[in-house]
Amino acid sequence: MSAKKISDTVSRFRENILNGKLPYGSLLPTEKELAAEMQVSRPTVAKVYNALQKEGLLKKTPGQGTTVVFNGERKRYTFGLLLPGAGESEIFGAIHDYFLAIEKEKELKFLWDGAIANNAQVRQNTITKICERYLEEKVSGVFFAPLERTENASLVNKSVCELLDRENIPVILIDRDIYSFPNRSKYPVIGLDNFQAGYVMTKHLIDAGCEKIFFFYRKNSANSIYKRIAGCSSACFDANIPFSKQHIIVGDPSDTHLVGRMKIVPGKTGVLCANDSTAAVIMSSFKQTGTVVSKQVLVAGYDDMKYGKVLQPTLTTYQQPLFEIVTSSYEMMLSRLSSQHSVAADINLTGELIVRESTQFS
Image 1 (spheres, rainbow, N blue to C red):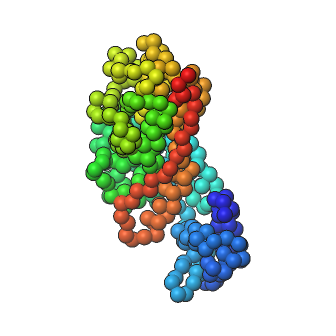
Image 2: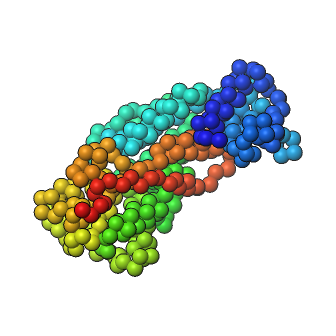
Image 3: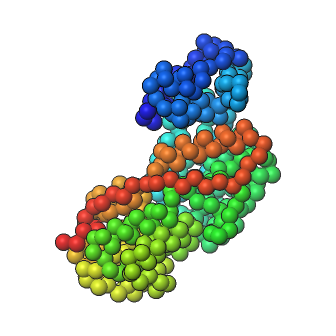
């Protein structure tokens, strides 16, 4: 059964429960019976029942079956979105749109103060005020994509989470933790499998003919970068290609002197960038220094920004599974609200390699 059909089935059951066709106490078919009726597998039916249970509409009791527990007084949740990177990256705007789609489908509300100015320092000064407003609105939970690219981002992220903790408001972290590996916060983190993404992109560069790999990122980038670097290093190790600290470049991609530190072996060098914005600037810097991308060096990024399709050459990238990140985050929040006990959990999702001209030697 497709994800859409599962969603449609959940919606049908939800409507029948809310309008009274399936009243409080109704015993639903067993997973085996419903699977036979719908001609799907039992695990598929389990997904339907589990989704409705997380919404507080059903209860699955071993040995007793699945019953309707909705009694006509369904709680309406209000959630806060803290996405400070939305003013800088398209992906957080898209994440917001997916949350709005959930809002339209279910009886709940998401609060969002819009994209914060495209300036890391302004975002830092604004985020705490937004968080305080959410407390005044008595939100049921907060989805938080931690701040990055400011000197004291970790302190700001920690203070935001502590503020929400004091009010017993559940927090789901999106994209990254508030601490760098190996440290770990107590909050669930839903995002891209960064190690796998680092490995896949590096292997792609190696398969394209690269025998020398560099990884480039800006100072104070998100701590998820280190997992991508680890994946990159692992792929190089498996291919018997040297990769050490000298292959990791940190700084401003528009600094042509810094970019020049990467000793390019024409036709054998690949540069993996932390994101598309870094890759786009790197390509510009290469052009200024006379290094031809796709002829002398290959370049790749992450996030599949729209402008990657119009760069010359077009940019190879790694598309994040944004819809899956949002739906998994929402399901985790419902689980947190319904359970007295919660533990730190990572949900690492797989994205998709998008191959374009920048990783093909001509």
